[in-house]
Amino acid sequence: MRLDLTQPDFKAAIPILKKIEAAGYEAYFVGGSVRDAILGLPIHDVDIASSAYPAEIKRIFKRTADTGIEHGTVMVLDHGTGYEVTTFRTESRYQDFRRPDHVTFVRSLAEDLKRRDFTINALAVRHDGTIIDLFDGLKDLQHHQLRAVGNPHERFHEDALRMMRAVRFESQLGFGIEPATKAAIADNAKLLVHISVERVAAEFNRLLTGIDRRAGLQDFIETRLFAYAPKMAAHETALTHFSQLPDTQLTSLASGWAALIFLLRTQPLAMLKAWKQSNELITLVTQTVKLLQVMPNPTAWDLYQAGEAAVTTASEVQKLLTPDFDQQQLAEAYAALPIHSKKELALTGADLIKAGVRPGPAMGKALNQIEQRVVAGALPNELKKLLPIATEMSQDRL
Image 1: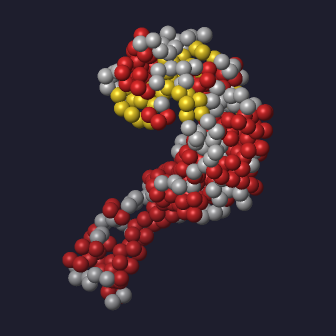
Image 2: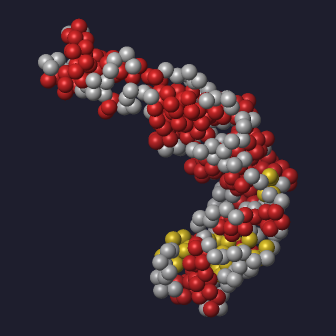
Image 3: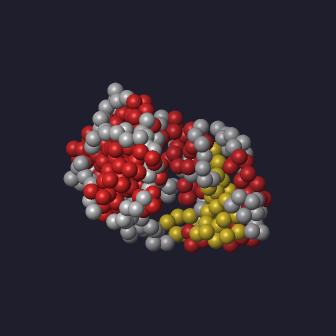
């Protein structure tokens, strides 16, 4: 079987493979880009593996950068876009379940491929599109199956993150996990505690937004991986509920986390901090969960306080929780608000000061009350009508 390499990322890198081969070494496309291309999915990073050692790659090409030379990786810059070339290697024991004690460069493609995680990621492709398949990866791709290369227990002891990658690929690709591989995950789930939260979170985030979230979550639960993930051990029942929701693919990470946290009935800040998520995501999920707590009938003020992003996210989550929820109605309710931020309020503190109102708590409370009334539609958003009312309210509080 040959792979069509006319996609721009592959096509641009073919001269690198040819130049390495012309120097007397082997070079192949490997990894996720090969897998995704065979599946007809968009490809991202193109990885190249070679029998040439790093020093030899640096002699072959004029412009290179050492991006991970201790692990055999050199960035080749001769053709504009940089491409990483990694030397075939074998790895020693993994004493910490995430990094080898040391790597050994080798000339054998087979030795390199057999250390990879799953058969579908252990394919190599020559510059002419010829596919090298030493572990029946093509068969597993055809059967939509995730199977560890060789002994799954060894693969998971080498890098325990591979167990999270399995459930992530299950969700991302819509594949199932082969029974022996799944059993090995269950046997070794406790090793996940050795992996940094950031690495675990990166996989879980992608699981949440995959095409088969339910399958990924169900195996995350069944294999007990969840028991070794941050702040998840006590939430098996809620996680199970989450895994049984309709398998509609979510459009954002915020929707996934908001739905999960809402069902867990836990505080977004504590959970998301434990998972080392960004402040931006924490803010959005917090606003979304707050809005979900008053759904499906939020007030105008609820929508206003939440903001457009949280309203959109909450709408998607509510549809997931309640399939007959009318998302259009919620969108129209938000669009119909007289104002959508304080910046749009016709009245400002400067207007009140100009009218003789003394700055202070009373003026602030008056502005807040005016804002709420405008949002509720009880007052028109017009300066000439708001100013006298706010002035009087401020004086009442002097």
